[in-house]
Image (cartoon, rainbow, N blue to C red; front, side):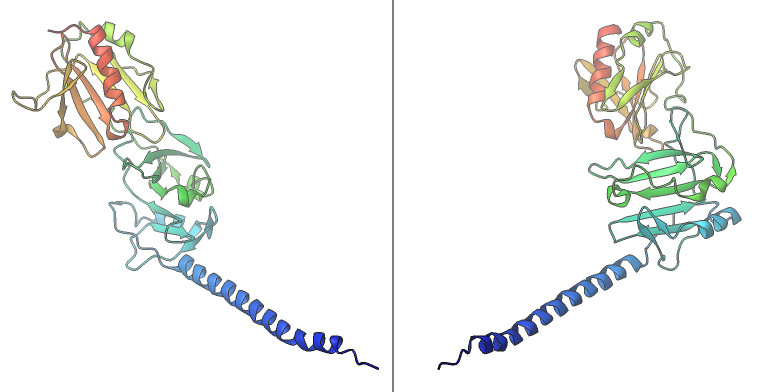
Length: 310
């Protein structure tokens, strides 16, 4: 009679299997716990925010707003700030790259002009200003009808698929006090002979660059094109000769029309003022850097078609 040892061997071999399985589960659990601790530390890392001009940051209104801000915004947790923290500042983050910052009591940006369009979000009017740096997705929303002015900044990582970060903020509780926008671009230029301008206004395009649509404006012989988050493209026909132009300065020849870029008129925005020379009417255009050459070319073609050379 033979003895069947297969069941004994099977029972004997299970022991290292159980041990290995237990060690593997412990290792996985340790990795999960370690990852959670690591990412919790990233989330809880204090955020460094540099001081910026914010004349009303120490106001009682800003202090009250900071106290009422939510502990979570678009899935990001409220973060501590590196000391010394600037007055009127707050932040939310999930990591060093996924972050939203808020500043209360700042100045209204120069990009807020008579031609700017705002959007009512959460009961307050907001102006969005996109970073003009190539490749950047950074955007800042500014209140335009509240005191103090609030600015909220983030990028695509911080938004995480959302269209804006401000609808959940209690900004509408601040005092309603609309701020005055800056003068429209080119409005400061002196007037000149506009007798040759009417034909140009009738041939200007409805769109000068991607997303830039023509806006109806009240000023005669002036046209403007606007895009969300961007500074406007503005053309004004019948201005005085450019004060900073002198013989020998560099000109940009575009489709037969010489342009003088007057960099001395830059006022802190990303736009510069261009003058089309050699025509029966002096023509100026305000061009944001973000539009590239497309807008210049389209305006040049319209000028060449409708305004005779001198």
